[in-house]
Length: 148
Image (cartoon, rainbow, N blue to C red):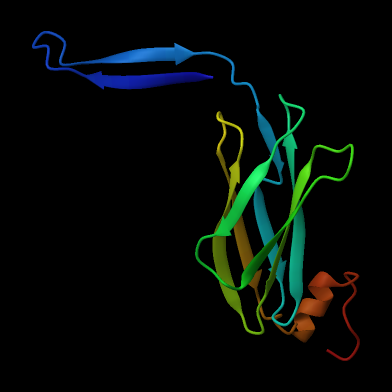
């Protein structure tokens, strides 16, 4: 990874200059998926499981979890089983009407290098649009329906 950082100083001859920082980034914790996208129809219960895998350490403790904004999104923290090291978060959402819902989950960990983890959650509940007869020909078997 390469980062260019602008440094501003009070030195009259060098009021600003750039530092170039390069290096490898070691992954400490892998979150999969890092963003949860739930899409369905109103009245459906939508859910997905996120896996949190410690990469550089044998054990990771998640000390807390909180959602920020929306009460319709629920999250359940699942501890690793015996002999396992991966945590899981079961994310679910329900709406009985069309809605676009957003929130993020913040996990607090015991790792000093990565004390907070963030998972973005999007849920879209769309009402299904009825198909026109002419759409059947386009989306079907490319055969024109009889009687049109």
